[in-house]
Amino acid sequence: MQEIFDSISAALQAGKAKAVKELVEQALAENIPAKDILEQALLPGMDVIAVKFKNNEVYVPEVLIAARAMNTGTALLKPYLAESGAKPVGKAVIGTVKGDLHDIGKNLVRMMFEGKGIEVADLGVDVSPERFLESYRSEKPDIVALSALLTTTMPEMKDIVDAFVAAGVRDQVIIMVGGAPVTDSFRESIGADIYAADAASAAEEAKRAILRKRGERA
Ligand code: B1M
Image 1: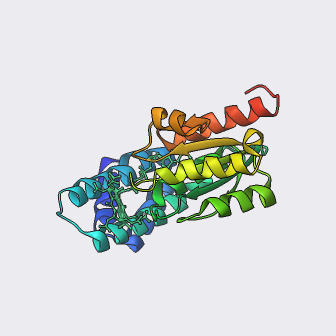
Image 2: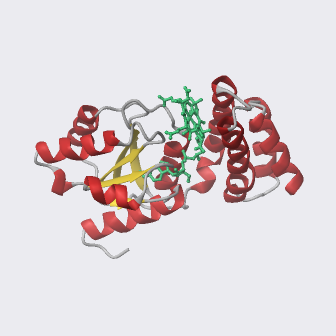
């Protein structure tokens, strides 16, 4: 099994989306659990890229094609990460904040939410506070989920919380924040409700909070 994980990781690092697709399909056909493919092949591959990017051993174009390969792989896992027959527990609006184009983590959170039976309206990346608010009004979600990967875009999260306060709807929605530089103390400082460190706990926390909000038991 380790062999196919290593091949997927290597293909991802080389940005070979087609090879990632084929190898992930092969792994699924061999009944390797989707969670293991994610945690033992795709995420470690992306971690290698992250370290190389930090050390200036690879640059934006290489990281971008690796990210595309990652998104190709995770998209294939989506149906397998969903809990079978889960009835919708609620609705979320998700997006990466304004000025920030990182979407891999956000896409994983969306997938895990869907896996828990939470319907998701995905606004994509570079989403302004106004768009989050508009989407709150049109979608009526239980939860608004914000992702940021840059220290320079984290303050956007506060602007979004403030926009909901100014619109008089802050107490009607759960605001969740996450992304590599985000912490629970940052969450507290901006008046958001929930911080989650990873996609799986984000989905757990979101489901629990929605059921609490709706007065049902988690
Ligand atoms: Co960017 N980048 N990047 N980048 N990039 C980082 C974030 C960086 C840490 C790399 C580094 O220097 N070490 C650094 C930020 C430094 C800082 O802010 N202090 C950085 C930089 C500087 C930049 C640019 C400025 C580079 C440049 O142009 N010179 C530029 C900015 C562009 C912009 O956004 N405006 C840039 C561009 C890019 C690419 C476009 C090339 C590409 C993104 C492609 C894409 O997303 N489609 C990219 C990538 C891939 C990275 C790294 C290497 C990997 C990020 C990633 O996808 N990780 C990253 C290095 C790193 O993180 N160590 C880096 C895998 C992913 C699964 O993890 O997103 O953390 P993550 O998600 C996790 C958790 O954080 C959590 O769940 C996920 C896992 O379970 N999570 C949530 C995420 N969102 C959540 C929301 C929640 C809850 C949990 O609730 C709502």
